[in-house]
Amino acid sequence: MKHPLGKVEEIPDQGSKIVDFFGRSVHLYKVDGKPKAVANTCMHFGGPLEMNDCKFVCAWHGAQFDASNGQRVDGPAPSQSKLMFLSTRIEEDVLYYVWGE
Image (cartoon, rainbow, N blue to C red; front, side, top):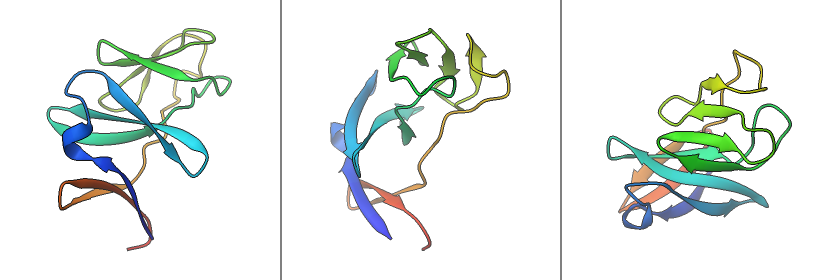
């Protein structure tokens, strides 16, 4: 399965772009120039995330996650929790979600 998430050129170098992914939202962003895709869901209580200074911060309760690896760095989310990254691949300047290929 392969599903387009967005053109790489439209992913900001700073901050993120939120796109629809089968009825859920996903952040597209870059770490060291490499595109990443992470579910817009806090691991504490499922709240939406905002990207600030290379961290994702939950709008509901303030849990914070490192954007480079998804690990929780502060807040009420369980200490070992990690954000959900999508498996991706770039083809012809488009970032795709890929599964089972």
